Image (cartoon, rainbow, N blue to C red; front, side, top):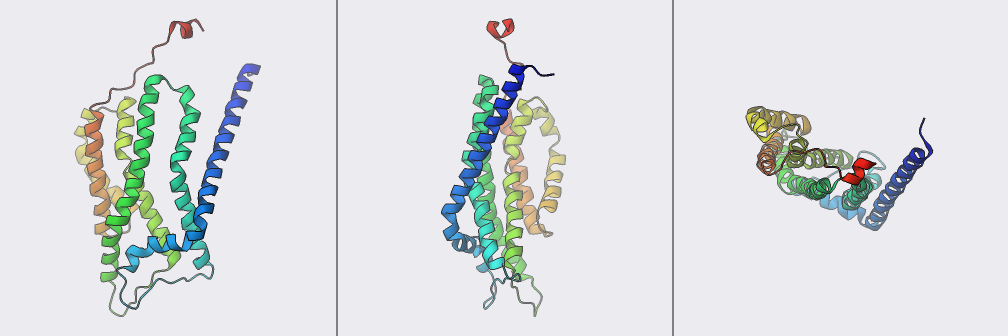
Length: 252
């Protein structure tokens, strides 16, 4: 049975967690409200890589009656979440920071910032590099007599899947640094597994992208290069050690 101080402490943590979650939700709603007026423009910007390579006289279509309304707002809501990520991570950091030691704080803060930038970088890479190549390939291999006219909801689901795949794959250096810092693996062990990592990158590229060699390769190669970057950076990190307790902590 928990003592009263422990129960009060747990209740305090739960209340703080609730307040920070509420702040995150409010932040997303505020950003969404600011962007809602531009929902159609945001979707048009997302569709630009496909529209640029569609055959002349072809266009995107909506097979669902409500799709022209809901698809842009669905995209806008997801964009609002992405834009609010720095503030959300700030709330997460403020919640867990009191439980961290000084050394851990100095390491976690750069990792949080770098992971955010890498996720944005993965999305940018997908939009500016992958989409033009993949969509040009898809439209060029359409059989004769087939008119390419993509449904807007299907297109949105497709690009969101690619955004998530590339954004997540760009987190590989952070994942490697965390594994090395926690002592789970060593840089030497990771280096010895390089052939398996390369094969695994192509397998993941096959699973996370559409079934074509081009998009699989465009995901697998950056994953491999990011693994090499994370492996190189991990050589400068020392494994986590047990924190040294002060005399006051030992007396408690």
